[in-house]
Image (cartoon, rainbow, N blue to C red; front, side, top):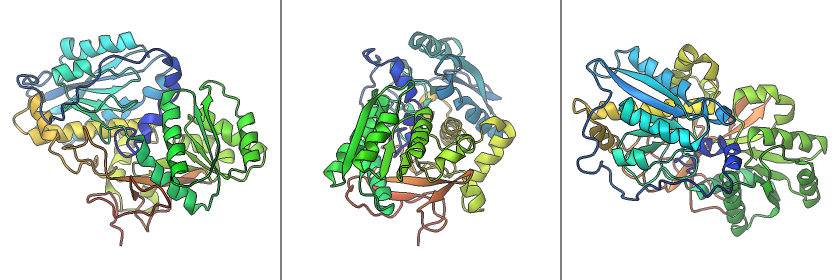
Length: 444
């Protein structure tokens, strides 16, 4: 699916489920993006090159580094720094270093995010901005045509030519469902239970999943989309799942909720398969390995264990791990840091494509002519000619499963970890041919 813009980019969605409770009932956020479907900045906008000197290009990051949301949004920057450091160790781009000169903290506040946006563009004169915040509002970035990168939380990245959510800027929840159906079939499950929080960033995904599974003929025997995001008591739900006879559980909760779910499932002796959209980090698995055995995850980037299991098959992953271990060692297995890395990679690709004509508008235009961007071999190819306003016809995912202290790729073909599905086919789906440029070995 496209939840961080790419088919699923579940990274973007699941990392921010907890954040939704803080704005539930707030009436939403202002600053809708105009659906222009243009691949260029408006005439006369973005024609300058702020932050660019003969030796460097200055970039700003706005993320939540303090406050209650910091755990969900604060780790984007280490991935950015690692990518820029790797590029700069090879003389940068055309002799210019890419410098993350401004690291701004929105403190988990909408008002501070607006202040930071103005500071980055008007005061710091950053050439581009990378964002990790629930409070992202696109209007000022669009008006100035500042190249803007980051994580798609709730679908307000699409439409404008200069907004680049990692993996594509269109949020399309339904595209994940064929992959879910495929896993249900492969595990020979007969009855599905679905759990989510009572906020849209959690419940929308699971509601869509349940509706499409039912329409395709799957039995959904229990659904609860009303759980409180803080300190939810899952024991009653697990008891109802047991009475309903469900043998497959889909969770749209955060790691905390998922671990509580696994604990109650173990306590009540349920024999069920679990699919989580959050919690695939190695640190989580090591901490809760006794509870997580057999849990499945759905991810849209090459799983990290593929570097060890299939040496030489995913050089982009090897590059990522090597750079992260050198420059940001504490964040090697952090999902949001990977989004930062992918965002930085797209910015650098756009700068290189613009060549000597280095203006913001030129980078936007050049980026929007990249048709098979994979962040160096980490994700499904993204066509930026269409990724601002259209979803994909096929969705590629990698399933992982907890085995011991590892989260290992499963159900792929040989060394190819990705499975791709037609997004319109939910009932008993079968993998389709992956798009050209998919990372890893081609399927035979």
